[in-house]
Each structure stands twice: as structure tokens, then as C-alpha cells.
Image (cartoon, rainbow, N blue to C red; front, side):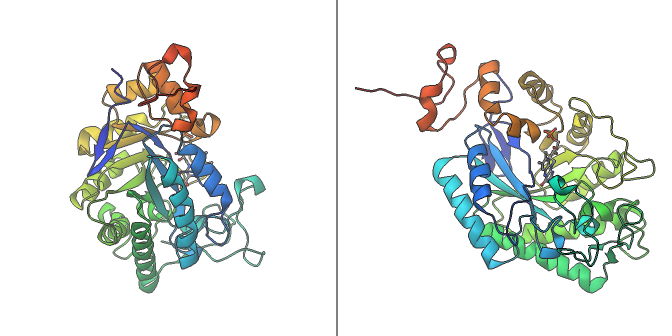
Length: 371
Ligand SMILES: Cc1cc2nc3c(=O)[nH]c(=O)nc-3n(C[C@H](O)[C@H](O)[C@H](O)COP(=O)(O)O)c2cc1C
């Protein structure tokens, strides 16, 4: 019996298996609004057999976007565009839909990766002044962000709450708060980006304060029956930066506030990072969070092989795995994993006839005939 294909409970959310599609920015929105690309992209991933799809980093305000083409959920038009896309996905797939709520902080006003990914300098078309815990740029020589004052912090709390209410109306089944990869909430956590000397900087407790406040407002704005969790960078991969001990402390603090899971990633706050990239390189962090905190834990990062994913879950290193690039490369990865592991997976009835002869029992409920 495959453990990867056993159901998983996150709060009141039941996942059919332990395969999650990681959030992936598409840089294809129009003033924050989802486009036909999102319908195609999310639509095809929704047919994959994964239990849950986490919609890409979705900005809670226009200034919280990484690039001008980021997805957002800060206007009625954004909400309506997502309603169309999510409605179409729902009509044809049982996949559970979560969304990652995000604010880019000092990494805002960037170009899309295929345009080089650099900062759009102030004064250039499409640029805007980023905000951050401190007026320290991500890379030396870049335009510095504006340090957030009390009114700015309140604005961001309100933006997260409003976006969470919109997500609630859209019927999203879960929310993930983006506190990883060097974006705003991670900037508060990391002493590399946070140089504040008020209640939001300095000690670990102070650096965790704003991310925890954001968790509270999002949790309060989203249906109590549906889970909210956080994606955290477990380490900055820079000496003196944010680390796994902080991650465990933050996870415990989140747990005490009703956080339903932890999605364990790493890096992103500093160009000085030295990441020992390799298969499953972030899994040991997930293992530690799971062992010391006990919340459902999602591991991510170069999990590409079904047996590898099975071993992570069966070995108790994490409760679920999330895949990003492997799902783009092979959008039927969960089908192929089920075939390899002798498990069953849900597929759309329109595709049932594709079931290979050697895997006669692969698709749940499949039956087809003809005159
Ligand atoms: C195209 C692309 C877009 C991404 N966008 C996001 C995002 O919106 N939010 C996020 O937390 N991580 C994002 N990531 C990181 C992935 O979610 C994932 O953590 C990372 O790619 C490592 O997993 P993998 O080895 O399975 O690709 C993105 C990655 C890719 C490849």
C-alpha cells in the first residue's frame, strides 16, 4: 500500500492523497486579474490527480506584487476574474484549491524572469516604490524600499484581511500565507532584512510579531472551518540569518494561533545564500518541524521521483510533498506515480480510455464501453 496515496486531513480539509502542486507565479495577469492563461494553466494542472493545487503567490495589494503582471486579489475585478477561472476548474475537477496570499515587500517592482528578473528602477515604466521592514535593498545598489511606519503596517494588515475575505467568497478551500522566499513576511523574520529597533525588530519575538499579526487577521477573515497555514523559509542559507531554530519557534507560535500546517521551503532573502541544491534538499527541515511541532508538514524542493516522494511520506519525514517544476514538466506526474507505486488516482472520465493495459486498476471508478 502506498502511503503517498493515502488521504490526509489538514484541519477539516480532507485531501485524497499527499501530492500537492506548489504555488507557481505565472507573471501573466492583467492589473492583477487572472487571464485565459490561468484558465489553461490551472485547468490542466487540475486534471493531474494531485490532491491539492495551491494557486500562485497572489498579491494582497498592487504594491505587494513582485512584477506588474503578478496575480492579485485586491480589487473587485481581480475577484471576478478569479471567480471565472476557479469556477471552470471546479466544474471539471475535484482537486482542492488553496491560494497563497503574498506581499513582495522589498522584492516588489521586479521584471518577470523571462525579462531578466531585475528590479524595475524608480522612474522606469511600470516601477513603484517598494515597502519593507527597513530601508535596505535586496541587492546593494538597488533602489531602497521605504521602511514601513505604523500606518503602513496597518494598511498591510487590512490588505491581507480584505484579500482573505475575497478568497473566502471565492470558496477557496484553504489559504497559505507566504512567509518564505525573501518576501515581506520573511523580511520581517530575517535579521538580514529587518533592522528595525521598534517592537517589530531585534529579538526573535519581535521579528515574528508582524507575520503572526498577519496570520491572525487572515485566520479571522477566512471561514473557521477552512484551514490557513504558512509557507516558511526554514533557513536563509546565510550565517547570522534566519534559521531552523527560528522556524521551529515560529511554527509553534503559529500552531498556538490555529495554524493548520507548515509548508517548509528555504532561502530567498539574500543574494549571499549558498544553497546545497540536490534531491529533497529541504526535506530535513520539514522533518524537524514535523518532529518538534507536530503540525501536518508539507515538504518541497527537488522532489521529482515517485519512490522518493513515497519514502518521504512513509518515513514520516513529512505528511505531504509539494512539487513545482516536476508538475510543469510532467503534468500527469501523480498518474505516473500511482502507476509506479501500485496505487489508484482520480482522472477525468473523458480520459479514462487512456488507462494503459498494464495498469487496469489505475483510475478510480473508470468504466467505459461503446456500441
Ligand atoms: C515557475 C515557478 C514559479 C514559482 N512561484 C512561486 C510562488 O508563487 N510562491 C512560492 O512560494 N514559490 C514559488 N515557486 C517555488 C516553488 O513553489 C517551489 O518551492 C520550488 O520550485 C522548489 O520545488 P521544485 O523543486 O518542485 O520545483 C515557484 C517556482 C517556479 C518554478
